[in-house]
Length: 112
Image (tube, rainbow, N blue to C red):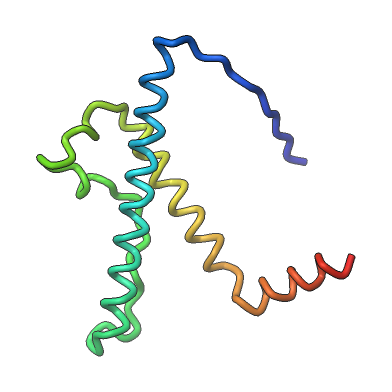
């Protein structure tokens, strides 16, 4: 049986700034992967040569680090990697259930 624990942290004023930066950078990577995924899916739907090809669902984030986004180099790579991991697990979970399955789960939850 899986067990989870919740706990609250109380960072000092010196710790709040880096934590806020890290959360913002992770959110930037997540949103960039969402945009990239939408682009690939839209491009695939309009291209006949890509019929049968899968949309890439990888954990790469290095393509988002450029001269315009050099601020991403200021945070540990684990933070950026975690943002991509969260995107991938969200995508995997949302693709696992079909829309009909989600509707039946909602109707079952509402009938209880």
